[in-house]
Amino acid sequence: MIDLRTFTYIDILQPKLAGFLQTVSAGYQPLESQAALFVEVAPGISINQVTDVCLKATSVEPGMQVVERAFGVLEVHHFDQGQVRAAGDAILQYYGIQESDRLKPRILTNEMITGVAGHQSMLINRMRHGDLLAEGETLYVMECHPAGYAMIAANEAEKASPINLLEMMSIGAYGRLYLGGSEENIREAARAVVECLESIDGRANPGR
Image (tube, rainbow, N blue to C red; front, side, top):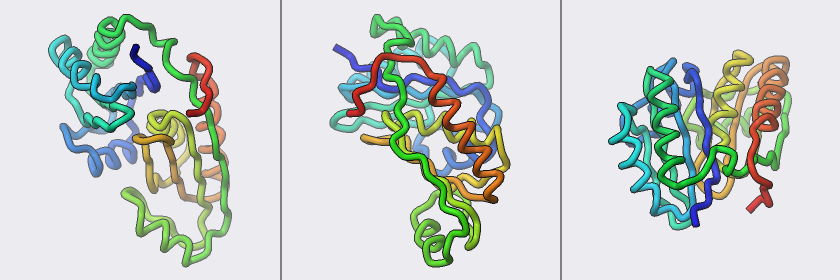
């Protein structure tokens, strides 16, 4: 029995998220303005078959394929949104399920820290793979379940407001998103994140 944890389309990859993925992805690097699909399933080993199915059925390129003990993750992208959606359809058909069988995202943490101290910004900057956080800026941290929804949250935040994408963790037990910028811009981005995740339908999420 397959557990479809995350299944999300991104219509237009925003510049900062595209650049971030180019830093952390092991496969074909996505480009700004491409469409993308992010899939997370359990058991993780089945993602190998899923990759085979969508690559043979469409022209999408894989940015990452990660097989963990519990979860498997696949990200594919293409400039043609139709190809990306066709890849998603091929995956759903292979499993014999529907998009609505995914888990509905849950936001576990949604917090802002204004006027970040210099030593805390230093700690964040040492662990991030994206933009830098300057002393005195506002830090936003969001934690979600399942982890994969952090990616669409990052993209929608960047669409809504000129923020800095510090870090995005979309693999593992929980997803995390770190943003930096002015308080006004961060508040706008945070609203977009919440609206995005709350609008995604799916089956009831017990949070594990």
